[in-house]
Image (cartoon, rainbow, N blue to C red; front, side, top):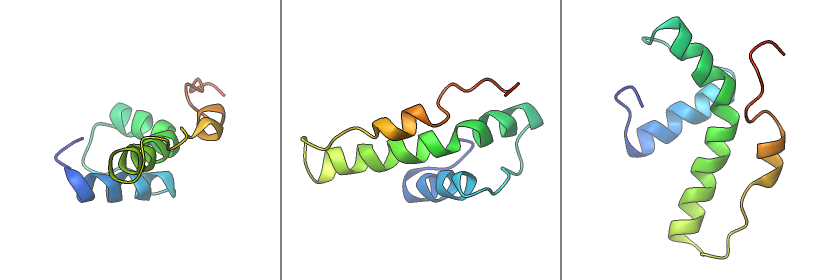
Length: 74
C-alpha cells in the first residue's frame, strides 16, 4: 500500500484508523484509505492472529458492521 510493507504497513493502517490523514497520495486515494482504515486495521490484526496464533481465531464481525462499505455520502 503506497510503498508500505510488513510492520510499516500495519503502522500506517493503524495511524489512519486512529484518524491520521494519509499523506503523499492522491486526494481520492486518501479518501478511500481514510474511509476503510478501521476495517483494514481490524482485518490486519485478524490476519496476523489467524496466521501466527490460531486457525480458530474468530473474524472481526463487529468491525465489518461498523463502516465496511459505507458510502462516502453518509
